[in-house]
Image (cartoon, rainbow, N blue to C red; front, side, top):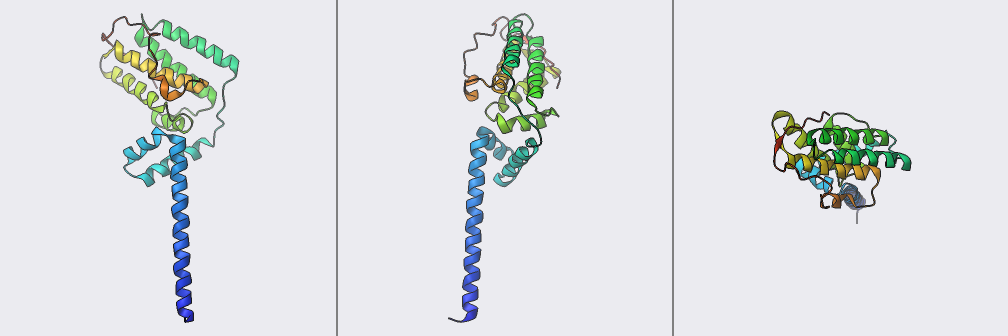
Length: 206
């Protein structure tokens, strides 16, 4: 075997090893991101129509959030916020629009106290997706209902759904023991049924 042949074989082997290392590293990154982001991983891949671009975006979110200190709220604050939430729920029956607006403000206040940087809605949702991937879609769904309410009447049932979505995120931010992905399936008897399907208008600002 000539020296030239040996050099070629070494180069081929080096390229093969490099390709294998790259493949394994990519698989590991994909697996890590899937495990961390759960349904948000699939949503981002579908939205961006590219696994590479989606993973780059999710990695960017992680990197951005490392610039902030995200903390769990002290027990006393959790108790206070839960009392405020119960008050929001209590006046939903008579004032569904203002209840949804209050829920929106309360959720954002808790986000701020936890250390999340409140920016435009899409960026705030992206930030939340890093640590709360199972409920960030609830946040988006509630916002969609609120945005529709700015342009046209929305039904009381839609407002009820918005409040349920906000509650899922609220509980996850406070650290409920109940898995966040199960919250939306919970019985909604805590909400009043008055005016089901009745058109209304909701305009919680963001």
